[in-house]
Image 1 (cartoon, each protein chain N blue to C red):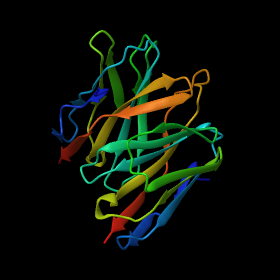
Image 2: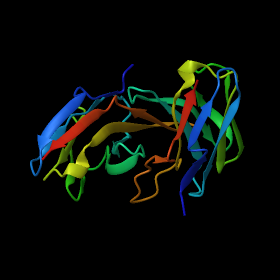
Image 3: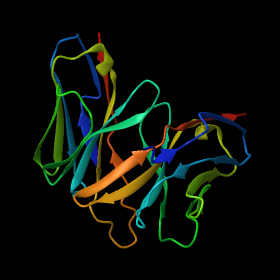
Length: 116
Length: 117
């Protein structure tokens, strides 16, 4: 079963505008973690932001914030004041605990293009 | 000091050959993973090891064999390479338990781009 769903294969945003990248997840476990990663054209995977399932407040890291709606099982990434360097693939991921370790599920990604 | 390092970064080889990709992490993590990223950028888990023990083995051809000599290393050996094996292979690691204030995120290596001709 699909654990992480990203429904936007591609998004465009004007430089200096804000953009929201959607992510929904599916789990019955009460304890989980939600992550966003950025993959620029150079290929490396860059960790951006984390939200724990028990965290009461939405996570923020600089221009990144995670809009966590637990009842809706959504974890959207908001990038404020977009910059040209934000053009990249963005992956939403969920960590689900297992008895013997952790399993990470990834969405199919959203390609963001920032337009000057 | 690179946290998760994998070598080589690029591999170009002929169909039918055997190749290996090595991965090492210096973060003291218990769990290591191999992911395959295809041309559509989809990240697919292949294997996961926790303290040298295999815990996740997704539907992967048995031409792929992971080996973990110790918890800091997880190597990937591929036999009889096929065209469809061309992809970027990422090694990653994570702590088994999230320490207070930690995120327990997945740390990725730089990726190894395999091209099979």
